Image (tube, helix red, strand yellow):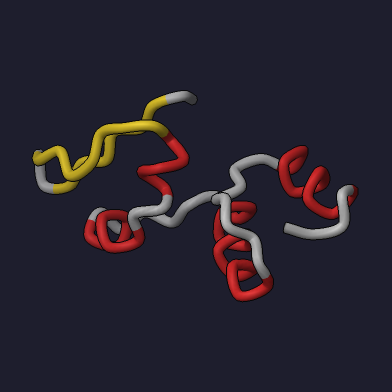
Length: 69
């Protein structure tokens, strides 16, 4: 989906591009939402130079094919 809306308690907490919204850890925590596992993995890889939040398996595969961030 190109756009995500996060709601909690009948209130919109975030509305925007999927990649940007899934990067909002505090908003997701407040709404009790976990990002996709591939996004969580890419967040863990930030210490290793992965700057972009990855959302799909093909994005992750491309990262490893080209040899890193």
